[in-house]
Length: 424
Ligand code: DSN
Image (cartoon, rainbow, N blue to C red; front, top):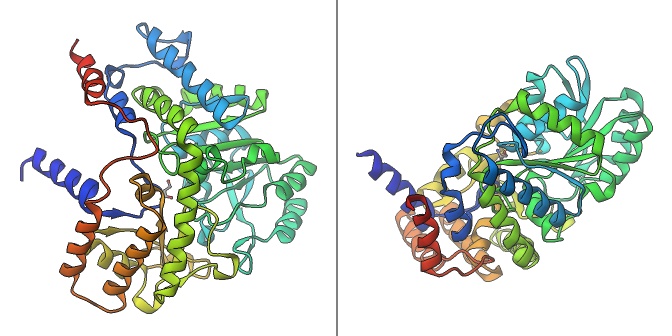
């Protein structure tokens, strides 16, 4: 197969033929995609606006300052560092500022969703910082606040990291902040999964609950280009972060992200609340539908979820790996996931799958559409209907969702003129 055909096949399949339920992905708006394809993708701008190590960056500087200002207004915070090229680089920067090799950090449990970068197996380990997991309370599907506070008082960690990649309910930021600050520890909150929900006012902003600093990616429920961001109200911390990110963790910061990030921020200003509201409603409806179709959806006692995400125990259906593969054959894309009771080495075949509603919501799906997706899943995985039949139904269903909503309606002429600006 020729390269271009491989790429076209990917685009056709993932963009037009699949129901994407990967909770960490999304699609940009047409305008943001156009703004992504500019000459900035070829350039360097090491350093900060106005203090670069290269010439030729005067327009990049304007865009970068604009991004920081837009995000700082949207998030109602004082300082935004838009240079991390990913959420993991944002975490690496903040962890390095707050800890030295040999220090200790408390994190959410790995099996309950801590991101690999929070752990000794990932970025934290690369920095020589030890992780200690806070206990998890399965009755409330959250960090066990009392036990976590006790650990903070006893261990006096350098910092505590909240936030997770399985994130059904807000972590108890305020309680943890109070305890951490008593022992001189900082609180970092990784909001990568829920940034769009924070902007859309459907999830608490941890900075307003006392967290010292937030790290995030910019492409999950916040539907921007792939990249990262850090925000805080602490000027000293912000200055240290800006000194550490360059030159320690990035040289250039992939400048073509910036205009697309600015467009997404503006669109989220106008459409973010409606978008976040529908994402969360869809997640709840999807969980309820899956549960009525016979699936074991986690956290039923707590109303399943308050985010874009739901988690299903598929042990009885053969485990996360088998189920995720079967769903992929029917063009339903999900990821297998550890559940809180899985042993850590079950990563290759964990008991669960994780599902997110943010991308299909972006294409306009509402509660009744998620009911239909739950039915496809039952027909495939429980009734064991022919995968070809289900795939056909999935593709027919998906053909109704090709326009990105919650975004500016831009005419063909504007899009073409943006694309053509490359050749002016
Ligand atoms: N690996 C991503 C996720 O799926 O949650 C986060 O970076």
